[in-house]
Length: 113
Ligand code: FES
Image 1 (spheres, rainbow, N blue to C red):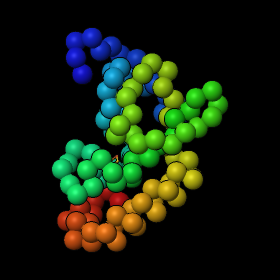
Image 2 (cartoon, protein in one colour):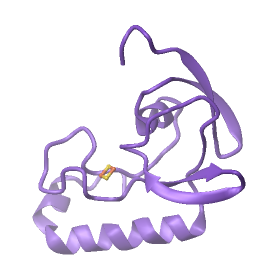
Image 3 (cartoon, helix red, strand yellow):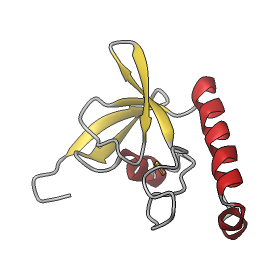
């Protein structure tokens, strides 16, 4: 973030919050206590930027589109759903894939899942 950022209003799961324009959506959601699974965010790992466990749905004109919360930038009016059943199923399948690819990694990081 820089000096030009400003507070904007975003909607997460139908509730409104304030966030800094341009910040990473996952950070804003975590600050508000909204749990979104994530593995490669904040850490260097073999999965860096690719775990896809943080998938959420952005709502635009009544339609939803899945995207990664760790790459989504906040803008005024951003609306996100974090608990869509199809998205949760996708996250679970990604989790199993990641676990199968590196069981040792998951033994070290089992919290939050
Ligand atoms: S936390 Fe890994 S892709 Fe978002």
